[in-house]
Length: 245
Figure 1: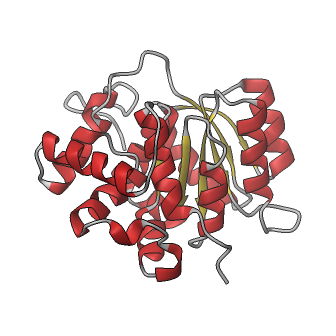
Figure 2: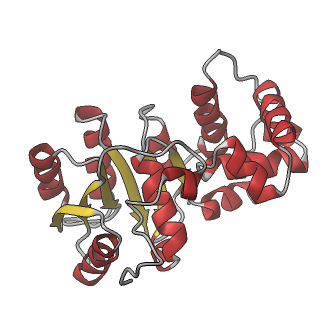
Figure 3: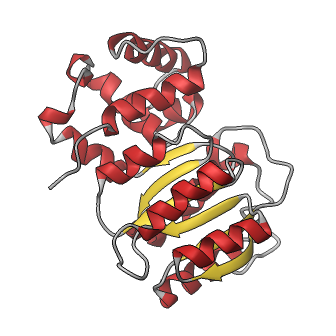
């Protein structure tokens, strides 16, 4: 992805260009953790080609924790399954990062849909959380959008996770009261889009999106004055479920 005079790097583009939010001022720095060397280095090359600084690239959870403590990146990109057991070491490390360094955003990559992982991550209740399937890395623009949104403090959940939940009636506590349009809005909320981003995605007016979000909060009985907190609660209502078999 060589830059030309007609193109800009992801870092030099404003967040407004990609996410509909205000532009960032600090440079984006990242630590990568994945035991699959080819994937890890591929992601590293992709990010560096876009002008994003990769401070460390490691292959296990302990090395990740050490790299985060040393470099204090804005974002850690973490594989769920890493040595020694290849089960949930990356998730455990991600949760420790959010506890010990809540200012560091975390984007977790997983080979398969695992609703419990997304739910546990969102339960950390700190800004900058993402959960994507690894296949999303090959969708370069979409992946970079997610990187920037999470690094800017947003919450991004892979749409495949949301769709999986929608196919599971027993996990839709309260969600069955939503209209099809409100379900669409909630799904895009889970992807981390702003109200304006949702309006553009669904070809709706901003006022229609705002009314739909208000209705979602009411129907899911989410109280409080902080909209950001209630948005996360709404997404959690989707993802809060027993571990899938």
